[in-house]
Length: 112
Image 1: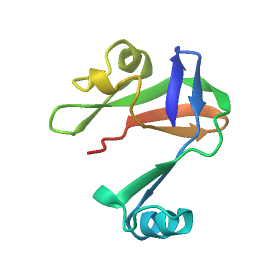
Image 2 (image 1 turned 30 degrees about the vertical axis):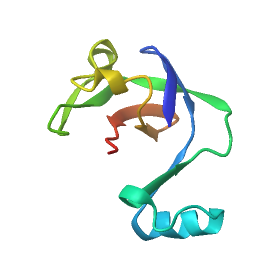
Image 3 (image 1 turned 90 degrees about the vertical axis):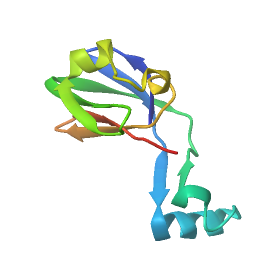
């Protein structure tokens, strides 16, 4: 999803679906889009509803650097400094890992 609001207590996000490989080709075909899709992935967002989920106190974030490697840091540090891909922070895909009803990890998703 694309997180829209950041705090250490909760995240508001817009759930999107990321398809790659054969799943992307099948989904693109079903939607009448270019298939196979460019760069071997598509993103769909059929519902703009914002959802809120609390963040666990020990949650971690995974920053992307310019080599597209990730580095694990405490979530509060991730919010304060998302890494070298700062231009991507508000508009790039993030994977939220939710366990027990709370975000326990957030990982930046690089897309070409």
